Amino acid sequence: MAAICSCSNNQEQPVIKTDKIPEQEKEMRDAIAKYPDSAVLKATLIQYFEDNGSYEMAIAELDKWLKKDSTQPQLWDKMGELYMGTDDTVKAIPYYKKAIGIYPDPKYIMTLGWIYATRKDSNALVMADALLFGKKAAAEREALLIKGIYYSAVGQQQKALGFFDQCLAIDYTYTNAYREKGITLYEMGRYADALQVLNRGVTVQNNFAEGYYWMARCLEKLNRLDEAIDNYKTALLYDHDYDEAKDALGRLGVK
Image 1 (cartoon, rainbow, N blue to C red):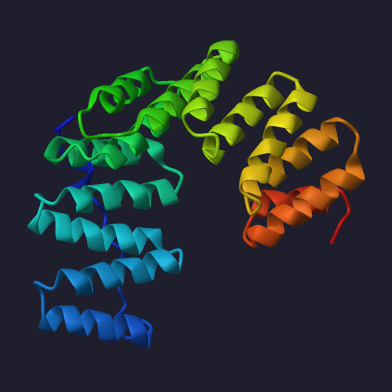
Image 2 (image 1 turned 30 degrees about the horizontal axis):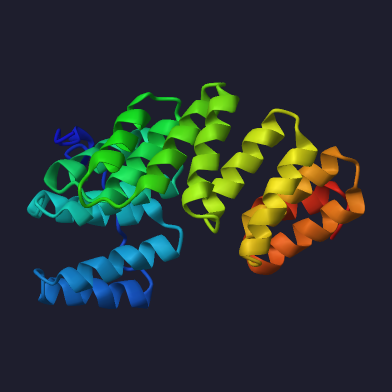
């Protein structure tokens, strides 16, 4: 887990045309030039790029920082997060592994476990067991969720459902477990059962956008289109940037 990712040393740096950069960015770069050891200023610039969807620029800035200070696990974790923002889990994995190698924070382990699970990688089970047996992790429900996601991904849905049920037995308000159980049932073609599970999820948390979205997916399969449209709209009410819900409404002819 402690192997350093070599890609940070070979990162291609975007060309910065100083005469055309936005004033806000210029001010931040000038401040960093004046105070090069300020972690706050560096983090602010990285966040600025991330907020504007400029992940390549954010990655390049963080890469420079890591080359000067490779001992802080939160920086490796952040690099993994940035690659996740670009949907590149392959590149994200080594950074999370490095963060865990420096300091095995449960949140780093959870994230890496989730990535492995969605990629059908059995290392997900290793991460889950690390959470289960870690003395200070206090993350039993998260560990069980990772196992459930993994078994669902590899086609062992019935086994996955058992782990999701264990999650909900520990914490009946755990919306991630409702979502994953609902998705698994949906993929099994058990749309009515999935709808029932997801309905419980939105009952315990009424702003659960993903719950409404997947309820709508189930309702479509059950040919209850008016209800599906209402649920897609509700998902967007709680998450204005829910692109999948927007696309679904467009597909159903709703503007």
